[in-house]
Length: 455
Image (cartoon, rainbow, N blue to C red):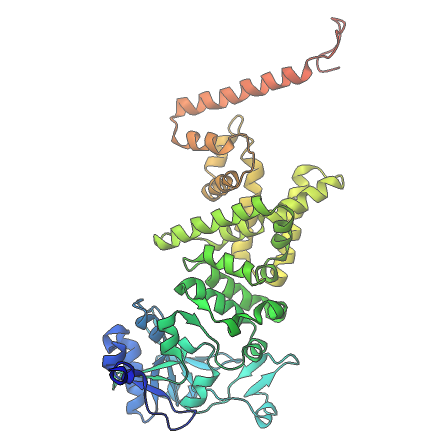
């Protein structure tokens, strides 16, 4: 009975590079689980005499019952050979050259089998290059399917699906790790992180997305090597941050980033604010991530500008207070703080202007929303950033900021009729007059001829 029970996992292995081969009845996948275009690309390359398999996230997600969104093909064909086979393709990349095959809006990514690098490869800068710390700068050394499996990051991403035979080839422990819910690096974890520190962020992202645990030896070096993210180009980190926080699992991702000391590498100013005011800042960020996850999971649009406004607001307020303490007036202090915070942040994460400018506008509106007298309220209501600024105001209030019930006032104003709005503005003027009278109330009796406003 035990032999029969474990028979499916006892595949023949001729050597360390031979894969475990899983038949269709063992993994329950079929071509119907993948897009027709991705399967056709693989079949067409096979008919042209090349090896070609669906690989990576699409195989992993299909095994987990998740509908794949992106489809990758690994092949023995070089990018130039893929380009010759598909007129609707183009070669991209320098660090990692590959081919994109376009079918209308769908894009199939086709990568040539990669291999480990030798000293001879290093001497040819067009094919392979590392920096002094071991980070891969260029990875265009081609090899076999077995070599390619060892170059992949996690075991769960090293599963190859043959669309012709519907077999799955597993060169590590990928199939078993998916069943166990484990994120495990292939090879020595420290060396793999040195080759590409972004793998630390990918480990966290997959753990949050799939609700997996990071295997102990894979997790152990992360805190020690978190500082390596400082060497990653800011443009690449921007792309990774969007994947981290706009995939519907932002809250869990935030928790894991803090657990492994990665958050401070991405947002150093906010991390310092967290140390100063842990409860309020943490509450603000958690509420922002909850709202983001809710919108993503409801298929509602999410702008990175709002996300960056929330992520950097704690750093902004700390900086503004510091400038005010140095003698700067509140409004100029906020504006200067916004300039400094964004300038510093783009050095770490290259937020493009199409998002950094709206981020700053959301912040600027926080200073304008309290000023509602006369026609200002209607002018603000018509502002293109009003809705984002209003939502951000509510976010601040949810984190415990005292805004004198400003959010409630704007909520009522949006739903009020014209006459009700005029009354609300009038009430503001009355309260303002009363407040001024209270402030002018003398502490001692004054002569009747004293000029108004003098005390």
